[in-house]
Amino acid sequence: MAIDFFISRCMIQNITAIHFGLCDPGKGQKAYPTPADEDTWIATVDNKSGAALNFIAVDNCIEIRRPDGNMDNRCDAILTNDRHIVFIELKDQDKDWINHAVDDQLQTTIDHFKANHTLDSYAKRDAYACNRRHPYFKHSLMERMTEFKNKNDVRLHIDAHIVIK
Image (cartoon, rainbow, N blue to C red; front, top):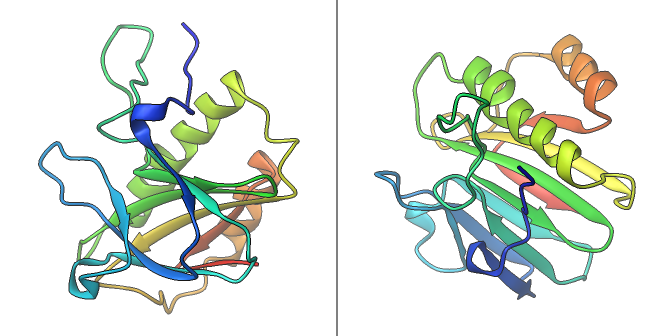
């Protein structure tokens, strides 16, 4: 069954703010962007491109199912415009979060996206694993990031500061 990642009920279109946050209230609610309430932000977005962005809530909005009918892993959101696509996983955990965020949630979403849409039209393709408790991850994961890039043609960042240039 085809998956449409661009359904209107999951999108907020034409975000023109140059600085805003991404929130994930959890408990079955979908993630959302906001310029207010900075204490609720899990990630910050600095849109230096000057182009409007579209926000797509993926988790708790877009159904991505496994062949057995059960819900598959999904990342929380996607930011996109004509040039950029950014897959985003939002976390608020102390430890043991990177593997699940990258291998299960981001990777699975990218696989389903590529099976239903094309990445070729986007000049910039990024994936962010963001954690409020570790906004600037201090350990080098260069090898893992390189493997992710080689596999997906998407650049992986483990950082809660998303920059769109």
